[in-house]
Length: 286
Image (cartoon, rainbow, N blue to C red; front, top):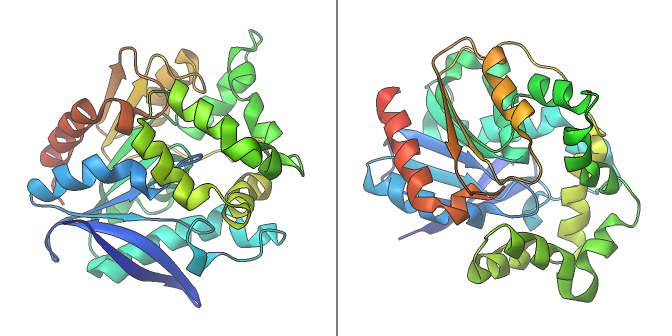
């Protein structure tokens, strides 16, 4: 049965965290993105626990009411702090000096790429859904065809002062339509909005974008084993960025294209994601 635990990720910062699997088992840390919540991993939590892993999915900084610094102070949502939060969660789970598996989607994947770049010795493996390596993404943004720039227009929209109120207007109609169009089940949409569908949480989530700006900072080559899953119907990440990711991974690399799957693969194609993820973890034990 999935537990809801409170995990301290820093002084006065308590993350709501979904946990499945036996304590002491190999750790799989799962980081969610936007516009979703830690509920995106419910299927993966169950599958990982059944396979003998300790699966931990935190509701990250700003999403958890107990870890919500003032979003007007964007420094509190700087990329370095988000990376530190994830590493502190791993430490709180008993992995301060042990290798663990890391999984990320969307913004959570951006953090995961950063951790793999900075702390390769701490990771047994990395699995990424949708979000390409930042260098591949930046290169695709600058391509003359403008395809990736068009796909990423919403990033700049999220920097606007009224972005939160726009997204929450009319019972969060835009978010509901966006998630439904991407194949997210209705019950999952309601779970995400139970976390994100209020002004304090939404403003804090958008502070992640405002702290970073529109462009991702470049990273180095990734040496840890990587599984990268990309749905070819993802309207936010084009083929150039996805296929270009291989050029920035020096370690073992597996690129899987999910036909007909959009941006939210963990919920749209959970069985296939679970199958690929479990095979990847088994291939690269901690």
